Length: 361
Image (cartoon, rainbow, N blue to C red; front, side):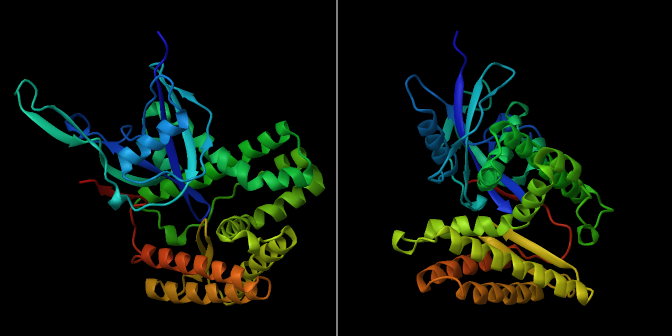
């Protein structure tokens, strides 16, 4: 008997250095009181002759009420303990979990009552960072998370692979090491989130040093080029997003792109140095649109927004010396969207749930 096959979408977004993945909780009475190990990717079974990606898109639409991102990347299939094979397609995007609306199903409830009741296929949705998602997700789907992290890193570092002329084997070793490093970093913050004695405002990133491994893998010069590339990864993501918004007539050529990346990275470094010189702690907050900087001096969300807005203006000023008017308008729009997201994200400096959790009607 052939194995059952399902397909779904692993929608992810970036929040600073962390990835967050959208999970859905199944509706109906059987799942009502289940949480850890009960969530899932939006997915459904594949029928004979159906396209895997087409099914993944259809199921995402049916379970969330939203269309999947235009660009999807097929992840390595996962075989669950019961034999079912799950094909996940990763795509970067964002949506408000409060807007999730799923299709419904009807079943007899209570059992043997003869009464038919209608339930949503998905009763709630949430964004989780990867360590939290590993706890919430059905055990058979957890391998998808690491593969999703690897897929994002492959796309981010593809240019470095070409620059250093790395073979496929070495590049995959680099991707795996980076994925493990990022998951370890995210796990540190996830543990802090559930530790009542851990104040995230006084925490720093853990010391995860793989310098020797990188040097052994890439050589001294390659490791130095890798460090420079890595330090500008946020700015490189910004340029990818900017290019996607520009018409063909305003294409951003490679030399101009590298100049913009260098200017934005230099501005971030300067801001951090200025903050350190006056004894302040610089904080970075970002998405795929870019990175905003502010300091924790005041501890007031309103002040954070003011400082982030001032930093955004510094970036716009630097970009204005490099971009054409059309390119600059697109960059400014991205900054406006980023600031709006940052403003909405600000809450009083108390321990907050790291997920965005809502129930679907």
